[in-house]
Image (cartoon, rainbow over the protein chains, first blue to last red):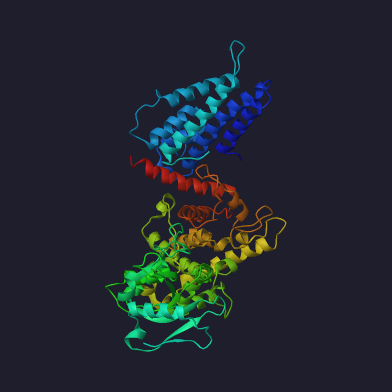
Length: 172
Length: 422
């Protein structure tokens, strides 16, 4: 299984291939953007997985539902009536997962959505969405600067999360 | 006082003059009691020297620990740097202060640079430093070999032979200390368990052996009792919400304090403790199964020493033993811990060493060598969780899923602890 470092390496390799003699192959840039995004997803999902494995009593019901990406259902019949259960899968956005992780481990942190890093993350999300969910009315172009920015943002976000949650730097 | 040449020596009046000057300026024991001093000559290099005894108070201020091969300014100190934080030096310095007498310290009498410190130390610089440090606390005679009139070539040869030593391993130190301070109980216990054959001793160097060392055997015992103690402070529901820190016994010249503590409390009765013997025998069964599993399946797993002896890697043996102690009062889980993990076509040996060696968490640096490969605290914490996680249910196999879960738990708990400190 690949980890976030592998995805970042793949993204950088594709960018290198494009720059070193394949200027007509835009698919290298498109893949590189997607891989930059996947690196963050891999990192965040694995981090959430670490918390899923902990004893249940260390998180509230809502937190566990969030970690497991499930919905909470109130039981009004059967032997467990009057209690809650975690049921069907509920999609949670990557941005929300990051917000949860940062706030959970830094209760006193103030909103960081206005900062430069988060704005870059939003930009990366926007371009990734355009690639992953194309529409004919979207005007879309891609160049190496955008790809470099995407890779840098991916690394910065991963570093930010690692220092806020683990209080540790990660190496690339 | 009389100065004589040894019968085999080619007499040299210049050398005799220098020896005479040395003895005029310095008080040696030989001078004090007026016994003849003999000038020897090294048959191989041709360099001249005398043997003499000089007291701490006389020699401390005239020893130069920065001897140079060339007495000019451009030449730098030739000897290695002193290792003053090394346990062996710390003990040496302490011993010197308690009156230890050192011998065969190799020096050169040379006034060409730093004449205030004419004895240039070529061999025994740590002993010399220890002597200097003991000044004012002890005043004993130390034995010196003092060279005179050396050429650069002779000086270089002396520097080289004085710095050639055959290192004594910490495992040898441990073996000597174990027998001296505690007798042969640990060795016999290991023979009884199976770690050592009948009449077999601990290895003198772990890297050349596949047997348990004194350090590992002590660590096994200490961790069993540390775990047992910890287990008594926890409720069953709390067992999986902690990070445990298995311990590695100190090695080398220092006696391990935790082992010593256990020994003081229990004495030789420790070797008859049924729970410890049962734990030891169970662990040996695991080690044996791992060893055979690797050795007999070369097509499925590389027959590497590190894989064969996975159970004897510091982080593995200490963690397994710690968890055995921890679960002594939790019989159902202890029973699972004592079961040798299942093997299969994919996992030919119970500790699944190859899978462990591939293991890598996102938090690990790219250079991480895998689970149970090192002795670091991080590795010990993770391995303890691996063994503990194995006892949660009856799925008695150390597969990738279990390894992931266990390490996730360690990292998750660590993050939670750090997170709430803000």
